[in-house]
Length: 243
Ligand code: IPE
Ligand code: IPE
Ligand code: MG
Image (cartoon, rainbow, N blue to C red):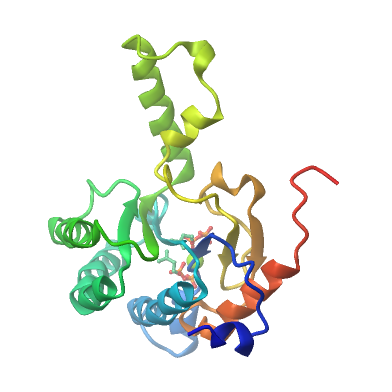
């Protein structure tokens, strides 16, 4: 188990919370003359190794960007295929995830999803609710700006109800009203497929996260490449504004 550290030359200073912008499924498929949905399925197959590697390295939380609030702009056929994959994923993987102690959580607004996909997500969260292993957060219909709007509304409601004073609002008030409340501080964001932007992902939480961009399309992003991004993280000097 610990030989991943030896195999990839890693030290015990692993990030506590890693987030991945899983990009490039479409280009991966196009390169092979396949429909975009095949790329998304191939991306789904990649998850097993990343989840296992995260657990083995002792990473506490892994947050995966699966569908953004902007992805509704895609053709309905692709959007439907993605939501069907959510169901397929949990049918295939839930038992193993549960056996491995993974705790599943969704960040984002799943209300507008098809009923079947919502059911699969809720069932996965309920089943793994008490697990103490890797916290696996799926960002589905997630957007950082909409998350911040939600947090502002919740805080404003508390103020209106007289539960808190405006002068009491601080960073911890905001943090406890984000989807990521209770998760460890975000240490590392990885984006695959070459684009160097956040695309409305974890804008507040990214304040002091290290960013690593790789050119590999997500379906080809396996254990070795993942370990290489952790090695890159370990080379960074994190100063948080200090010296
Ligand atoms: C997957 O990659 C990300 C999702 C929105 C599911 P893309 O579908 O964006 O792939 P590219 O960027 O078109 O290659
Ligand atoms: C970001 O990828 C969203 C997900 C990975 C789910 P996109 O492919 O949607 O981002 P843009 O359009 O390149 O910014
Ligand atoms: Mg993309």
